[in-house]
Length: 411
Image (tube, rainbow, N blue to C red; front, side, top):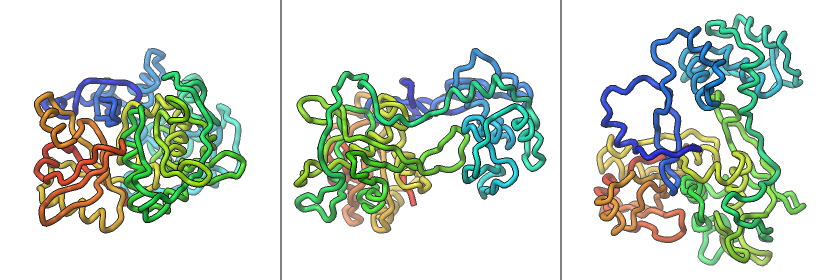
């Protein structure tokens, strides 16, 4: 997510018989959509032992080392590797009394809950983990140096962010977490979401989708501590090898990058209340930025489905428009809206000609949207733009299928 490339997914599909590689994601635009890419060719027909040797290669970037270890741990079913690396990253271990949880979708066991007591890492305990007969996988030697390499990648949420890299000045904005605006059904409304000068449309579209489907789930994410700070809960993969999301709490101060005066540079304020403007979208955006290490870490693209997972803890279902009929698209969106399932969509990477056609319909390329309504009679769709303006109203299903890449639903 943190580096850029200029190849779209459609171009990649034209490549004949690509080599087997590790697939990760990085940003492809400033609007906030990422597509898969294949930057490294580390894993072909190598043995586990050869792959393990690569792990200790100091020339590897951290991302490459993690991708390779993920291949050994997840795809090869090497459970002990995952647990050992997980142990060193958490600086704790649960050897005997940890409850194991086996997912139906794979053959990997992991600790679902942290241990009752943290035990400081030492090589003896690592060896005990490696000799655990309940764990599947070839026993690959894991040195203290290798574990130290992984430990460098641990991400910790900062209590606040330092100087903004875009040189916006941080200012305190006094307000309320939630404010019911004129015409709103509740104090948490999709129209509270306004994307600013940050490429995180994927996150803002996800906020709007969850606010539309289940406003109370947004409320549960934010706690006013009464001391000028807020606790924001996010559902995240705590480690690169984690198989499920876990809730983490990030303490947020209501100080935000401002462009001029007290105008927020990134996510905007919502409705105006008696004690100031509505802040919930800004608080969530800042909490995520703190968790990831800065606004720049979340502002170069992402996937709206994964952002909805982070906000809800639910699993994403992704449907590519090229794989379904127009009628099926209508039915999927209509069902999601009726069942109050958070739903997002995003557009393709257009060429110049197609971009010009799309712009006439207010459709922006490489951009996330939130479906608002669907008309099954006229076969048209209304879509909310997280910018807070230029919403797409009455788009024909044929144009939707042509311009939009996929639909994401969490439930």
